[in-house]
Length: 338
Image (cartoon, rainbow, N blue to C red; front, side):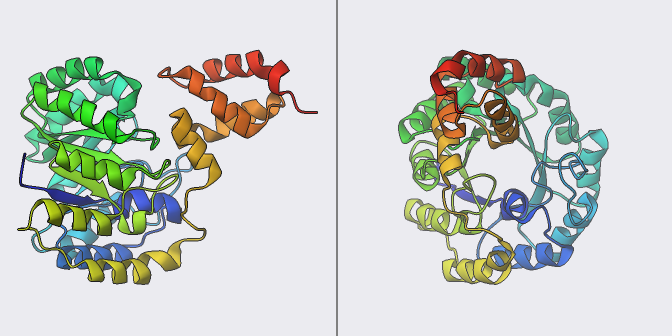
């Protein structure tokens, strides 16, 4: 088992969903400073959807990408900072921008069934002296056997340092994490990370299982605040990492104070696990599809929760408009509401 456990804090990126992407430069500087003082060595900043995402379509961030990067750079002394990047949202210039402003890493994320889109950007990032993470979003869309082929392929790219299993809908169970991690370990020497969401209340437990089974990076946010039902909680992950590696030292009370001072006042609604988020976890559906699903349910006059539950039947299919509408049409007589 690897004894180099790293708690990766994504508060300034994933938690931005919960505050409408309104973290300021000052927020970024203060939170980065306190995270580093608390023992966190990897910090992600920027828009929830990564570099280049701030827009009318995806939501305007309070600051420009470059300003978030500069704020982190000016606040940190030793901790590493970086940003998220999704092919098709960000472009080559965004990666070069991150390099110019002193980022240590870039996390390139894409749905696992589109992972080939990451390759050229990984090459660029590697050639820009950035540590390269590949975040295989919605990892659960493929089987462990299929994952083995994907991991071997990425390993052959020879441009990726860390491979991440990502539970985007918070639907995976500890047994899933164990099985998927074994496949990754058996097929690469890349370091492995795990990014969990909390739709079924499993994010912290799954992160613990990830540590037990070979992951060296686990992601969290302060208070577990993040997209949909939120993430694993940084404060808890720090305690877990310490239990696995007594050499790790974290100031957990300082993290709680940071959450209460800088995050809690910005949250407009309770982050608890809402019924719709639990249903997303049960059905393995990413929250980005909610508006589409709601509109189609309304069109066919099907109860929204019944429809979400029935979406389980899609299994690992891609959630396209056509697929969702066909299912709705087939269920109309069963769930029709006057």
